[in-house]
Length: 130
Image (cartoon, rainbow, N blue to C red; front, top):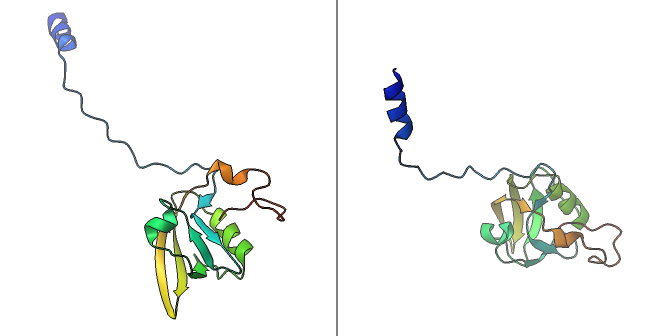
């Protein structure tokens, strides 16, 4: 290639293609988040709007029977297990709704920072995810 050709090629402009954003990668230090409030045992008391739980179809009154491979016996078991997954992970959550078992595949979100505020969980030693 001679110098004139090289100069002409440098002066050419090519149409820019719009960048395609890659799939968001989970933050390697974050804990998984579903977006439910659990009551006694593993009964779903509330589902926050626009959270992974709401998008998956979980409802208040659902009793969590299984999270991934764990059959949680209480609130702490369920929360600890969910927090062990990274945001973006897809976790199977099986619930008992009335007399019927339902299975949901939930893509976990990132735990909101306000959940770690001191005093958010009165009477509990450590703040835990819901």
